[in-house]
Image 1 (cartoon, one colour):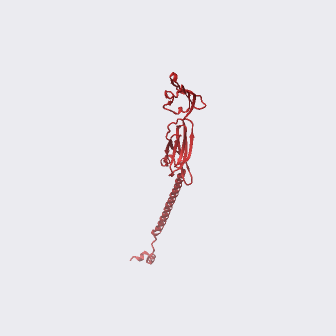
Image 2 (cartoon, rainbow, N blue to C red):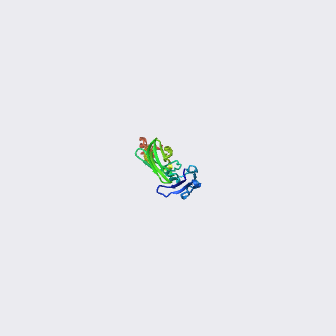
Image 3 (cartoon, rainbow, N blue to C red):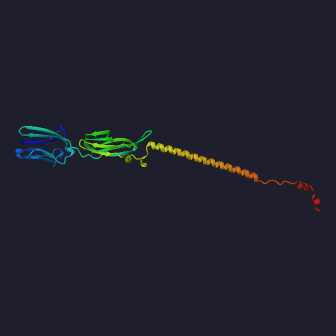
Length: 259
């Protein structure tokens, strides 16, 4: 049989404790208190028979050190460390379209997995079942982000996982959707180099065609001029050749010829 029960709360072992529950059976006193900053207001219930304490609608601000003191046939004390984890959100995967990297044989897409307003969690990238990288935080309400680079044609399965000791949330990576090449985002260096080479080859082809056309035109012009000169030489009028009879009568006086 107990005569007095005291419940106290402290955010940590080094912090001051605050009275949140009190029972004195012989005087039928059963009281609860709001605690520091009123964080327990309308959330505490005391069992008058067992002396147990129930916290309803628990939040992360209720995590901490709880102390129990029982004064009965002998004095008993117990400490409880209570951890409260918020429901985890799904991590978000996005692509950084302004950043591309390339090598001599492949191009890469820059990705970022992030989670906001989380605490006591770990954010990780997985390739299949293999852990690639991770980052952890114990602060309250903080934002996390973790980068990753993958090849555009990578066929492996990637996932981003946000977890705490009691639950986890997973987001699968869709490489085709996030890493597609878009005209408004620019092209990777490798594609730009290929397009530049194709443009240069096209320019050379156009220049060669133009030169061929010019040469053909010059050749046709020269042939036309040659034909004109030949035609002029063949068609030029020539002087009349005098016959021998004309030459004889030319020297005969006209009077002798008229009879």
